[in-house]
Amino acid sequence: MTVPVVTQMLKPEAAAMAQAARIFSLGGLVAFPTETVYGLGADAGNGEAVARLYEAKGRPAFNPLIAHVSDGAAARKLARFNADAATLAEAFWPGPLTLVLPKADGCPVAELATAGLDTIAVRVPRHAVAQDLLARFGGPIVAPSANRSGHVSPTTAAHVLADLGGRIDLIIDGGATAVGVESTIVACICEPALLRPGGVPRAAIERVLGRALTEATPGIAVEDAPLAPGMLASHYAPRTRVRLDARSVAPGEALLAFGPQGVAGSEKALKTLNLSARGDLIEAAANLFSHLRALDAAGVTCIAVMPLPHEGLGEAINDRLRRAAAPR
Ligand code: TXA
Ligand code: MG
Image (cartoon, helix red, strand yellow):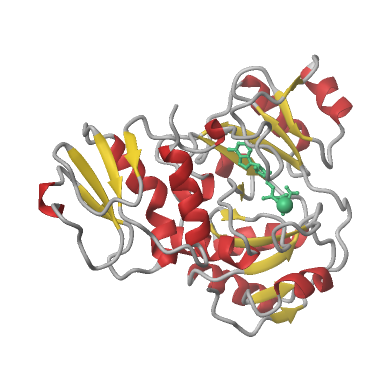
């Protein structure tokens, strides 16, 4: 469970902004205004900070997050731009447009922040406070809307405090946000597709592209919910069979362990990775997708997964493991 913290609320003066950047560097959580809604930020490269962020939002679900960067050049370190993406970035950044793009090689964003997907959502916010924070921190910041899971997005610092007070380190109070709805999300993977309507109207995007946006297709996560029930493709699914609640290891299997104890036949596992040897769910969440990927690449017949507790982040970890194990 989240350890209660004292949540400070400060105006965006230099000392507060420096403190916010320091908190990011230490793996903490800071809510800040963007031109759309307030975001809850964490260091995108720090898996444990990202795990804490999911936990602070409550009922964590590991929905992929938007990586916020200061400009197009910084965005190109995270994602690959095709011609449409370059056109849209040029026209609408900085501003309330998010692009979902193939991840760049060597993308420094934690696997957990992209929910193990090969794509990443990137956005260059226009708000002066968000820009200042990105410049001071010097790296990508992932930020979902700064509300508890299931609540509406906050457009004032008071909304954030009401939802997340005692769960995050700092709120930068930059007043009410101007746009008030979240960014428009467009995927530029093949034909540009509208994943979420938002601050940039569809017509403006279509005018710049010179053609109509296609509708979102199954396989891409949209607005906190899969497009169709059981739409498993929106999250990383290993090709190797996954066996849950493993109390023993069979020949030919790899072991995804949790906690200090092994299981019967642990020594027979062709490869073992531990989500958290000390049994810490935050560490486990941070390791989940990268460990699954590594075991998937190990050429084993099956990945046996030890049982994990269901409380706190355990709920989301178990949910993702269940999806990974679902028959395909
Ligand atoms: O205006 C905004 O976009 C605000 C401010 C803070 O920037 N942020 C925001 O984030 O609305 P959030 O997490 O509440 O919504 C992000 C949406 C989610 O619905 C998620 O599923 C989608 O973006 N998303 C993120 N990465 C994705 C990906 N790789 N593929 C498809 N959808 C993605
Ligand atoms: Mg949201």
